[in-house]
Image (tube, rainbow, N blue to C red; front, side, top):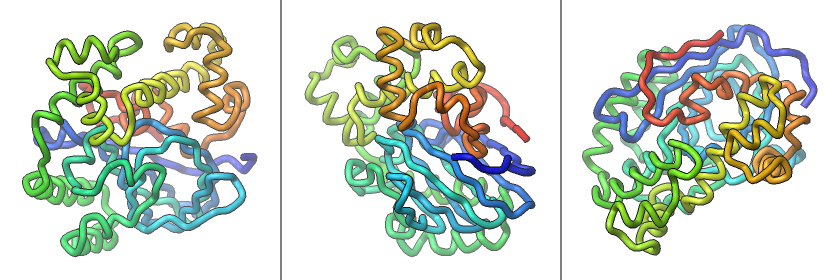
Length: 297
């Protein structure tokens, strides 16, 4: 992934309103006034995301060879493996990062069927979304984007809200997983919530598209990225993030990143450098953490 350094990229996040906060982690914007071709690799993070590609084409590949153009406005389903992306033109992207189970309340589509897919959002939201998309494309204003999506998703929430009991159960387990190693034990969650293991597994997969174990593995992997980029020793990172040992860390890292930890540390990451920041909510899913809008440039 060798390339010239990115020029003039600016990254901004905004928090959702109180009504959508249980479902939406943040809204984000990545832009540059300079046309440029960027190449990077995206990793699984346990969340689904809507991205408005406003500034040019975005190409995606699962093997680094065959690239396909993403929809102009896309839902990126749960990713279980890394993907290479190439952007062309003047970078301008608006995004909505959902909590792991958050997108399930806005659609009747089975979440499992969206896994590892990039789908035109209009196919999921229908004609009601067309006018919203057109206004966002016309204004290309991040504040207007946030306001439009707050209104649209708020109305959609009223129409599509699913079983609140199942959501509450999954919400508790997701929160436990994000608290760290040991807090996401399925047996303890079942006991606390008064549900059986099979029921919990089924509800979790229905709302997230993953098993609790899969999400916990992704969160652990995500937590390793900032200290790795900062140059901390691999053995120290493995211990801090809850891996059995360094060999376990190396194996899991290759599974989610498609490369060794040392290779990723040396690689240029013009897009990921913003999302990997441990203050970012858009990539590491700083689950419902308090704080102000985060800005990086």
